[in-house]
Image (tube, rainbow, N blue to C red; front, top):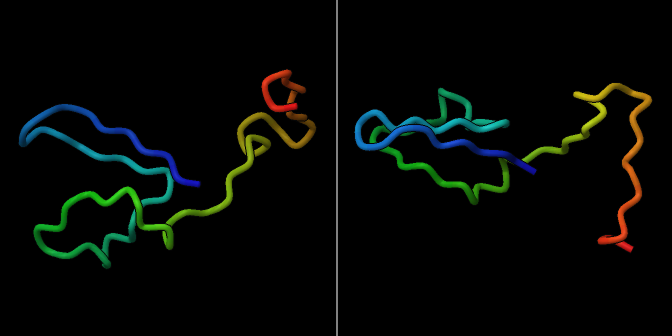
Length: 62
């Protein structure tokens, strides 16, 4: 999983990622690529909600 945010427009546009490409791997004039699976990592809401958090049951996913 990875998560992205894009802010602004034109030359003021900024891109953020939960797991960004390491700065030393960014090439000159490189454009954003949201499909680089090698930079995806696991994610657990327990990191935010605490270790005792349990995923609530959902009728949508039965």
